[in-house]
Amino acid sequence: MSSNSNPDLTCIILAAGKGTRMKSPLPKVLHPVAGRPMIERIALASQAAGCGEIRVVVGHGQNLVRTLTEPLGLLTFVQKEAMGTAHAVRAADIDSIEGDVLIMNGDHPLIQASDIQNIVREFRDEKCDLAVVTAVVKDPKEMGRIVRHHGELKAIVEAKDASSETLKIKEINTGIYVIKAEYLKDILPKINNQNSKKEYYLTDIVSLGIDEGLKIRPITAPAHVAVGVNSQQELAKATRSVFKRKIVALMESGVMVIDPRSTYVEDSVEVGPGSVLYPNCFLRGKTKIGSFTVVESQAFISDSVIGDSVQIKAGSYLELVQVHSKCSVGPYARLRPETVMHEDSHVGNFVELKKVQFGKKSKAGHLTYLGDAEIGEGVNVGCGTITCNYAVDRSKYKTKIGNNVFIGSDTQFVAPVTIGDHAVIGSGSTITKDVPARALAVARGKQFVKENYVPVEDEKEKES
Image (cartoon, rainbow, N blue to C red; front, side):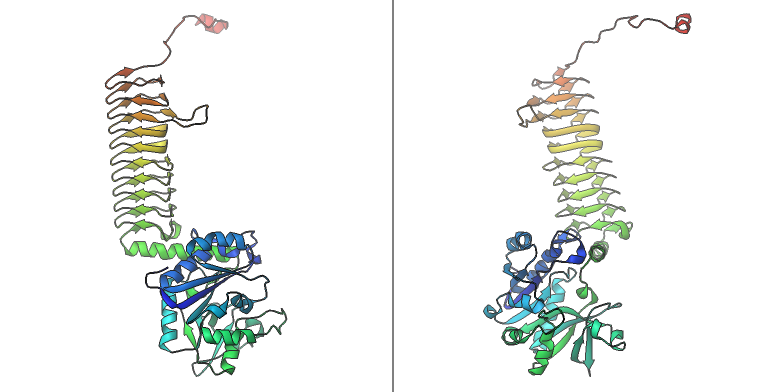
């Protein structure tokens, strides 16, 4: 709950719909927009806006939806039958609500906390009993039109019932309402289902409110508030909008984005000023990137902390790792969870680190796997080096390598094994025992040469 929480403001989020046009077994509100489920986006915006309590009405796929909403501290109510939006609101136990009620749909993922705050502020400043949130859009499509008379709300006309003149109206009903709880309790039971679908429509609250003489006002919000998601195409469009919004914010903070149209940064990511993002990189989750860091094309970084002046070269994949300042990664390197690269270290192409402490100024240039290892400072890891960490007993063992160790190419460390400081490991060795500091270790078969081993059978070869 937000620190500026308002106990007199309750939010009801309608999230019971099946979303048949999504053509997906996943409940509609769980579909992610730029990496975050729609219902989570709306809930977090509501919390940040200060809603004292958030109630979510679930139906289709309710068990899946609960796994996301309940850890967020939201109250969950079940609409047992899909009988319309007004019926869904009634399922939220409205009799137990006091103060003001904000009603929103769970499939409007672009709404932000500032939008909600502005809507509620205007509702209270105007001393409304009921407010309908509207927006002016370029293409209203099938949205209900807002009909005004001398600026006042006269009616909400559904597109299917609208005249050709009414269809020219660009102001539409967003499906968001603010109403005083006492009036919601009074009017909602009066909504009937005398329509073709035999459903209880929340839009009827407006005409009933007018009949009862309530003070009703339309509140105009930015167009993005009206963006609903009902298909995979609309989901992709909403995702593009969120990515665009994030990229604009990054550029305004001093991040250089070479091609904003092909750079993907989730809104939970932090990037420091002076950093450069190349086209087609993807940054997600709780990733934090420092200043003057370069992320090249095709790099994927998830839930990782990257320091200042780091170079993440093309095609590298980083997940749940820490990369300290002045490091270089890739191209085509993979850093797996619990890996820490310390300052001024380097891993090159086709190097994989898993659960590794990689020391300051250490280097692994190419074609290497290091797993469950502690690598000291100033270590040179030769090409083709492997830590054999997974044993036949299905346990994983650690390799410990001290400072300033030189490891020749094509070396295997059979863990558990410890290598002392300043040791030298000869190329092609399979190390199974500890190596003392400053020692040379060579563990390979002795070279044996037998001349004339291959018989000469071809006449031309004999002549030569």
